[in-house]
Structures are given as C-alpha cells and as structure tokens.
Length: 162
Image (cartoon, helix red, strand yellow):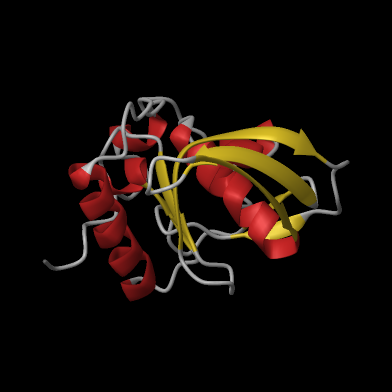
C-alpha cells in the first residue's frame, strides 16, 4: 500500500479529539504500520492518526531510537517547561512555531501487543511526543501563537473573518 495522505490545515479532521482505541487489533496494527511508512516517506519524526484522517488515539514516533507504535497515550508526569523550541508540522507545511514544552515527560500507553507500558522521554523525543499527543486532542502548533500573530500573520496584512 502507498503511504497514507497527510491532511493539511485547515482540514476538519485535525481539529477533532480522537477516539480511544478499545483494543489494538489487526486493523490498528496495520494502520500503525502504514502510519510509520507515511511518516518516513514524508521525512517526519512523528505522526498521529488524525493527521491521516482517522479518529483513533494512535501515534508513531521515531526521534532517533527506532519506531514506536503507541495507542491511547496519557502524560502522567512532566518536568517544568524548557526554553521555546521551534517546531514544524507535516500538516502545516512551511510553518515553524516556537512552542514551550516540558523537557522530560513520562507517558502511559498501550503498545501494539496490547500491553500497558510506562516510558519516559527527554529532549527532542519528549517534545515530539507532546506534539503528537496534541494532535490527538485537536490542537495544532499554531494554537501556541499569541493572538496577535494569529490575527496578523504577516506584517501589513490582516486576517479578516469571513
């Protein structure tokens, strides 16, 4: 199968809270596999199911330690926020946003074998994991911009309501 189509903002699928996965069955395993292929093909380090138009709390991530396949992640512990970090997003091509996120997190998630696991992340992996969890909640990097940068995206231009 060819890589999945990554949804681009303002696609409505990107703004909906994804549904919990009851069981990581054959369908979810196959979806996670295709998501991983799509992530690598688009040169990303993470991808959430809503980014390919599927309302399931599934994430793939590879921040340098190999591909992780995750269902129903919950952040259970986090450090204090670090300095801002410039993030990009496959669903908002060409846009970089400074986002302040905790440097270290611990999450609880279900792996592809259906086991509940706790795992800690730091640095880039922690920031990427939080970015992907945001996608599961319908939140995008542009939501971290100050209101005036959303209202006036470029100097001299005004975004008028339609």
